[in-house]
Amino acid sequence: MAISSTIHKISLNIANMDEHYYQSHELTVAKHPSETDFRFMIRLIAFMANASEQLSFTKGIASDDEPDLWQKSLTDEIELWIDLGQPDEKRIRKACGRAQQVIIYTYHEKKAKVWWQQQQDKCQRFNNLKVIHIDAEGVEAMMKRTMQLQCNIQDGEIYLNDDSSNYTITLEQLNA
Image 1 (tube, rainbow, N blue to C red):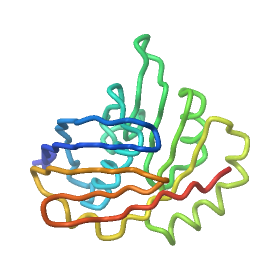
Image 2: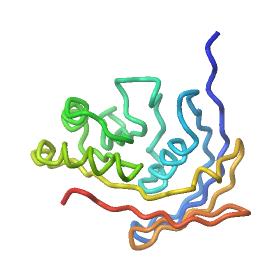
Image 3: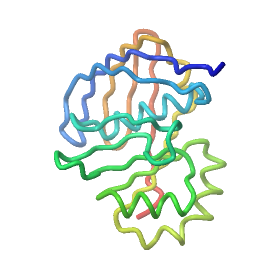
Image 4: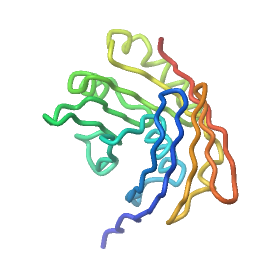
């Protein structure tokens, strides 16, 4: 018998001073059985960094054909494709061909550096690609089935807190 996904309810208040975006989101997000708590929180951080009314979570790990997050236009065109981790060149090429903008968020610094050294030259040709490293060590400690989070974004840093903890998360763009 297969293990089912865990459902998380998240009340999220975002104040993004860099993008002048101030909004509350009530999210219901599924955590795949094979997904770690840390990766789940990275997915949530990627949502915060790009939040809009149209941005949505997808099947993610459960589907090879969809990113972790995407934003679609009213005509069903993919405006923003967000992947996490270290995708291969074929997946990057596919994403850049299908979406107006692609963002890859890496995490686990040592693995990300090795991956980026291997991919950097291959990714130069994609004008619609951003590669950003998220440094969010320890943030998985915030993970609960029900979360109330406050997110403040300023000068490329994310300040994330709940009723008992605070984290400063840095975003470093790897490609120019």
